[in-house]
Amino acid sequence: MSRGRALALMVMIASLITPLITPLPTHADPLPSGTGFLSEDLQARQADEAANPGMLWVDEGARLWQSPQGATGASCASCHGDATTSMRGIATRYPAVDATSGALLNLEDRINLCRTRHQKAEPYPYESDPLLGLTAYVARQSLGLPMDVETGGAAAPFYAAGEAFFHRRQGQLNLSCAQCHDDNAGRSLRGDTISHGLGNGYPAYRLEWQSLGSLQRRLRSCSFGVRAVQFDYGSPDYLALELYLAKRAQGVAIETPAIRR
Amino acid sequence: MALPPARVSMPAEARQGEILEIKALIRHPMETGYRVDSRGQPIPRHIVRRFSVAYDGEEVFRMDLTQGVAANPFIAFSTVATRTGELVFTWEDDRGEVVTVRKSLTVTG
Image: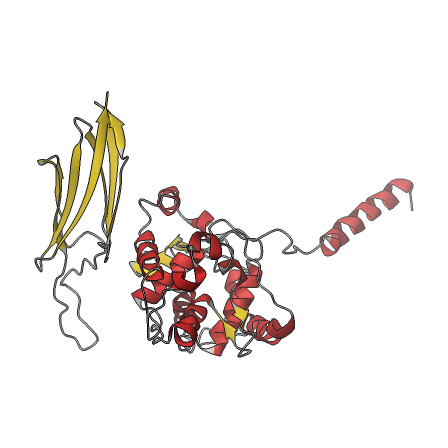
């Protein structure tokens, strides 16, 4: 074999194996927020507090924060004081495991647990305006802070369950979450762009709903989309998935209340 | 201490002759009247009919809204700062409910 042919063979072999040894993308860099898939007009509306319709719910949350509730007559502010300081960064750590009960709680559950445990009040129903308002108000205090949930220790089994859920094929369309939100994120699905499935903007104002809605409402829409079982609000399946999604969003800034299509 | 379900943003101070951009949001279902509920019964229309703004007693902006406007209408408009006074923003819906927001404006120069 001539030197020229040997060189050509080596180049060919190298070009064949190069794709195999290229490192797989890691999630060391935060995934891109769904906001990047919005039109410029919608991005501007989301960023402008005077124009973002989700702020109407944040206003309601701010009012409820100061309002006495339940048998104790205590308001959120009675214990937690000024939310702009006491609630800063809280939403970045949810869902989280409650030390007392060992249960996984999202922000909505934590607010309702505070109502029943400390204020001696009735919990708000899921997707009610007061619960959406308080959740959005609390999450708003973490605006721009990176998501950073705990997935070890007591949270580990919940995280594992969420990860399994994300990769499990389900529904009549036999699709897993990963097949859209990992394999095809950024590509078009009919008239919309598939996001990476991060919950960093929730509760979010979805144009389809013409209302603010929780991440679990969004998950129910996803389940419906693949014609799978829609779990109840607060179900352990969705809670575990919320934890997994929050970990996927590690380092992504909170944008509540985001605008989503 | 119930706040109105509305949000108005505008500067609190302006110079004479300055053009102000004013943005107004209200929480309202804007139900068209064309939809039916899960039992097939028509859902009655429930929309904001009129949005108007009075500046120091004088009407400076008015808008008639229809079924074609989405829920939680957002309205932005501009006006010229002429004198110190109060701006009164009024939304009226077809059930006769009225929401009012007042903002004061100080004009200098």
